[in-house]
Image 1: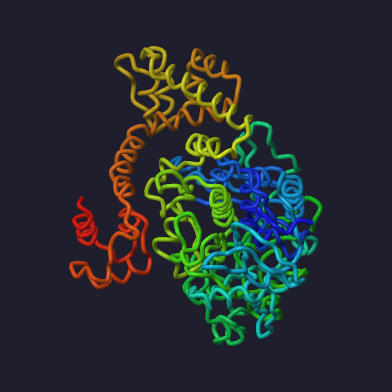
Image 2: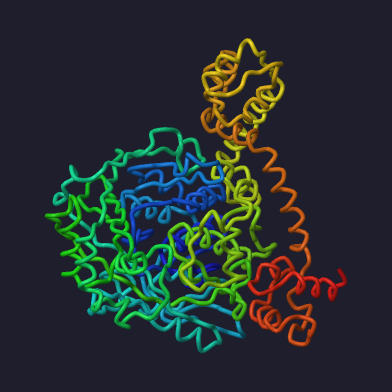
Length: 624
């Protein structure tokens, strides 16, 4: 048994798994400490991966050599590409997953990763020497030494669950909370707070009358999360089902509001505004007579269903009475009621952009401990924390993604620059370069970086190179091949598009919104033949080539804006100025700059309350 490691990761959830695997795959001797080895990668809430903006993060994790996309594909029981009716910047992959298969896949990966060991225990205290973490001790009395520690504690720090008036200590139902770390870090100067999240009831599918609900089937095409060609969706595909609350439902819920922990003062912490509980919905949106709900299957061999949209901490009898008024759920049988959970988090402005804490060296935070919510946000942070923990041990330049390079870059920059006033969730609207940060090109953006880090296996690099070669040749063909009016005008009229009067290059023709490249190929045999010659990832290459050509002008414009703003990122700031003495800065700017202590002028410009005139003052003082 070894007690000395390069990197120790605390927590076996989505952030912890990615962090541990990244550090180990880069060459660090790594230990993952988890409270329960049977729940590695557990999906604590809904059995789904991805969604709006979140799906882009999963694609980025995969492109960087992480595992969430692979695990999601292998455990998927439904896959959908959301927002297909909108532009490609909004396309977002999402899957329903077999909860047990998801854990099995993560367990298999973690258990077989070289240089990665597992220890089942609870961490009680961090070992600190000279303002640096050097190890930790556990409840079993074991001490481990490490050059870097990554905390990915999820909802377990001071976790308190609310089932109506009933309060139970725990990080998840039937799982104990963790105490000691929050208190220790607060004594060392860290600022902590409390947040709240919730989860719906779980329903026995045998008690659902699906004839009263609407079926929602998945997609049956080439899309998936992982860019690796050999990864496929292996499980039988299932449907989700849609139903709605009604006035009777709302009336039953209103009867219990006086006993709601959210409204009687029992819960005082910050909850997610964008994913409210059902009791919050009927109060905040009192004018609405119904709310959409999704019945989501938990697995291939399970009868368990997750009721998406009905998160609640109301007393169990109130939840049950309300559920029985919903079409299809009149005879509902529950496995367990919904509940809310409060837990500790730490202000993420206490972190550097590499996710190392400012107060203690060698200590990294990732996931809900930073005030975020969601498996995907946690996985992205965990991957970066694991990479930087390895770099911390072995030397090298810290790994930070810019806002124009990845949604993960937007996520981390938002956290360390702006902090959080509610559980942070990624949206496409948070990314100013979202056309550049599409889900289809995450491998083009990030796999070269993974290769440089040693996280991209040879088959991943080879697949990317083949894709780029085929994509480039197809784009060149479309830009060089011209079509005559006589050959294309009948097709254009059938699409409601105007006739050509002169010959036109296919790339210019594709700029028309009425049709896509696949439609054009059906009308032009020469184009169809050219596409059929693509031997590798044909559908993916055709889609990406079309996006590049249709949106080339917008992409170039975003690139120019990003390059202009990135000049500020090259101007270092930390440690160069005493903000408290700069009277030409606004009072708010002095306070915010002292609190965040930004790395660069670019980061300073994104801190809420910092005005353009404040940035100009900084540039003048820096001689710029």
